[in-house]
Image 1 (cartoon, rainbow, N blue to C red):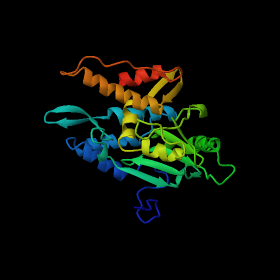
Image 2: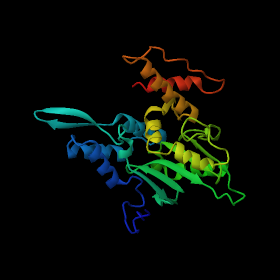
Image 3: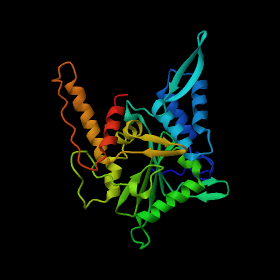
Image 4: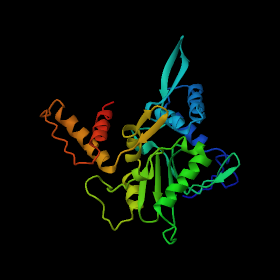
Length: 290
């Protein structure tokens, strides 16, 4: 169903300078955290909306912690102050999350007016930004799509404070990467089910949409497969390649089965090829246990 949520549209939900759909996020917070008082829920929302640093990547890191660890709040319970976490995504029940795809969202920041091609919202939060180029145009390249995203990061940084994944496409090829990744670290997602590499005659955007941008994989990728590395004042955000994601989940499932009460205590061998990113794969594997 198509709706117009712009300030002057048929179903307005935001001002032009707002990138969070606050009502949708409020409703999700209430649904996922029924035992937490309303005032504490509102305090969590205020934290999500706030920018604590002039540095975009620091703000993105803080928001990622909110996504994956919950937003810490305090409230009075009986005769004491209780601490708790407000969850923004339902990881236990992925189908419980609201996915909303918005085309040509107008964002005004300062004196700048920009319209990213597609934004995927989860529970009112703009987690995926997709830049598409027309395949019929000779200037439609992955590089021009990537450069457009770099321009957006400078012009409307408030949108990217909440970003989990960036996607660029020239109409056939499609690559994804993190907020801090240079062009050479944008890669294709090559499998829909994790069992087979998809048919090369299928557009890569279709494979990526079905294989990664779905209610099961995307929240899992955000929570268990996104890393931050800080070197002095520089932050790098790292997301997995498709083979790392599927291999680690299979390895975790096999390990749990082998180490269960009735398991044979043999989890098997994790075999890597040269250049497959084995160090990061092991980090993702370890991170899945916490």
